[in-house]
Amino acid sequence: MALTATMYRVRLDLSDVDRGVYDALELRMAQHPSETVAFFLTRLLAFALEQREHLAFGKGISDAEEPAIWARDYTDKVLLWLDVGAPSPERIHKASKLADEVVIYTHRDLDRVVADLSGKGVHQAENIRVVGVPTALLDALEARLDRNTTWGLLRTEGVVYVSGEGWSVEGALVERRLR
View 1 (cartoon, rainbow, N blue to C red):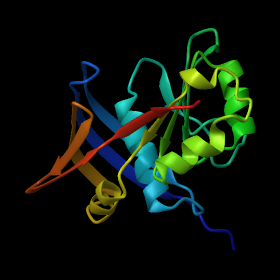
View 2 (tube, helix red, strand yellow):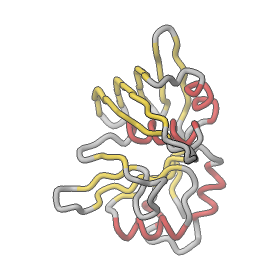
View 3 (cartoon, rainbow, N blue to C red):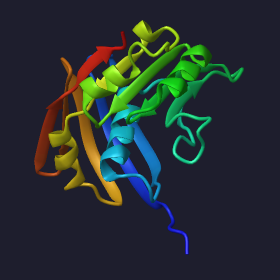
View 4 (cartoon, rainbow, N blue to C red):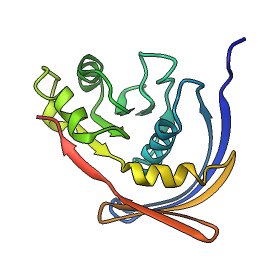
């Protein structure tokens, strides 16, 4: 018998001071059976922290032709290709040729992900941002993740603060560019 996805209802009160984005997000997210909680939470944070018009979850995990998250305009042009984890150089090369902007959020070793993608002939590699999400932040959020979750999410000066009723955790994001 095949395993089914776990559904989450997530409400985020987003205050992204660094980007000047303030929004109340109501998300219904499926956690694929093969997806770790760290990957799921990184995908959630990436969606919130890259919030913009036309942003949507892609099939990412179940379809190699789509990213985890993307933004397309009304003509179906890909404005943003947002991958999570440690995608292959071939995948990012293709994404870079297709999208105006490519961003990777990773819960893995940031330096390793950057090294694995750098110098591999990735199209416009110097324009690709790789954002490292701290393991301690993800571990703390995993302990507070519920099928119906309501969190406050604040980013200022590269530090992410996540809070709920009676608790708060923080973690500094680290950003690199491919070489």
